[in-house]
Length: 87
Image (tube, rainbow, N blue to C red; front, top):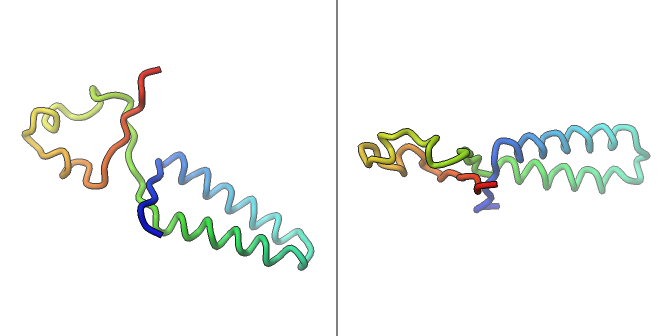
């Protein structure tokens, strides 16, 4: 899989879901094992191929040197950045 972008928070949520599914799988009957194993493999594949993007609260959190073009934005954030929308 390519083109999957996650925040660190999303990554942690998927990791928690993996732990939860592993626990359920270990406690369930062997009849459901294939189902849980399939779900686990899907989530692990997503994590292994995902790009984790940093999240900034606003443009003010980006270093001034980057904003003033003293440093190229793509060098500072090579994979991109998420700027949270105003609430």
